[in-house]
Length: 86
Image (cartoon, rainbow, N blue to C red):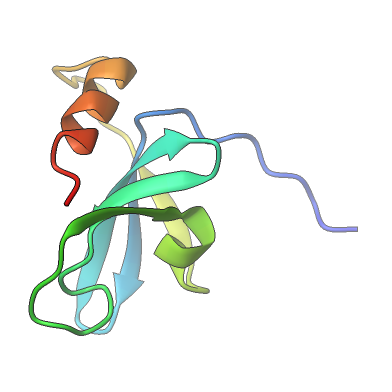
């Protein structure tokens, strides 16, 4: 049986390593992440999009980036991320 990991809090900043860079996104809950897709698939340009956590991590380790002095609460972080979709 696979060990169960604790849930990821909404509004969490996530990062996963890619070839030559670190890819970042915002966890918005229910298994979804908002991220800039421009370099995630080695393309030159792409929109900000909502994808599943599995798609975002793409089989790589995904870490939670803590911001102990964040300026915004989770709802505002998510609203700001959503405002950039497309």
